[in-house]
Image 1 (spheres, rainbow, N blue to C red):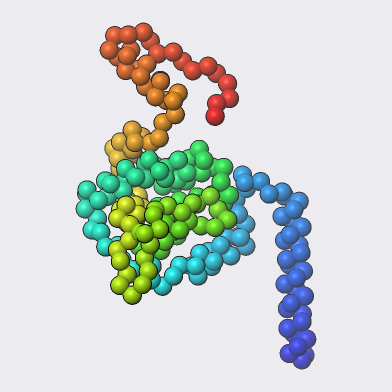
Image 2: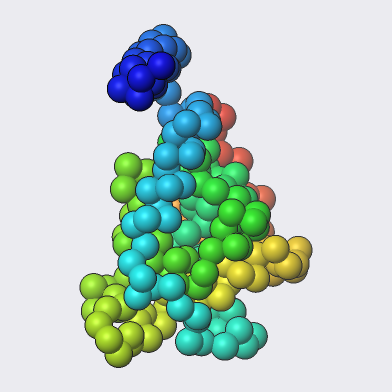
Length: 210
């Protein structure tokens, strides 16, 4: 068979496969509750790996000292845990509703990335996902001198590296650092007043809460 016929058959097969996939996708709907298909995950993985500039493929300039990891933990609990959960699993209130779902950052897919790749993802976000860009533009890494970038972001990277070994004590401590709603603060105040001899805390009204 001539080469041009083989190429034509391959192109036709690809178009047919694409049409079938699109039909199945439309019938399933576009709910954010679904998990991405292997095709979407594969394409997203390639796109993310190609999107990281060469200047970001470097080692964390901050040592994983207890103080640096602790600072990363505090920032993570306050800014990241609402989507990623304190343990990095992604099993959080907002994380469950995102599409694609946040990755389990304890797994190899995250831990095998270079420090610079993790820094880039935090600093620049991920398009077509719920991951926003964090950190000031001045903290970017560019140019021949490769400045160290934003210290806060690098310490987040240190904490992400620590997630597979995180302890139950650390997770319990992080709960105190998580953002709280007015209702949460009021409940905590009532509990504190009760412990100091006041009235028993009032239970919140049952029903759908946001």
